[in-house]
Length: 136
Image (cartoon, rainbow, N blue to C red; front, side, top):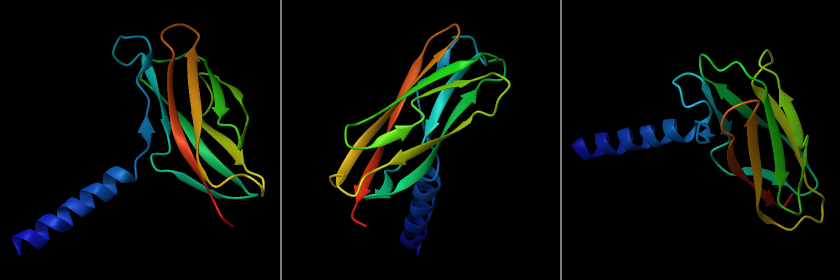
């Protein structure tokens, strides 16, 4: 019985941790609450050949971080991402919708999408996530 409870609790903990987004190292100021992070999907994002899929990237601001942040997005050769440059103003929503597109001839496999964030002042940060192209 103890073993069954332990297994159930472990699986529940893994499910809760797996549903969260991955985040980048902190950018901006080193002072507490004056920095930011980027949150991207944790697991591979599956997309079928010839389709377009929306993916959300979020800017997680510290309580005192009130700066505009420039995002530059780059995808591996074989897939396309739009937009590639975004200016997230301090007064705007921190969520950015990316459109990731493939062609029907895109090779099956994993592709990397990199997101670089540069604040007006302070340290930049970056992170990446994987897009997996699958058969239709």
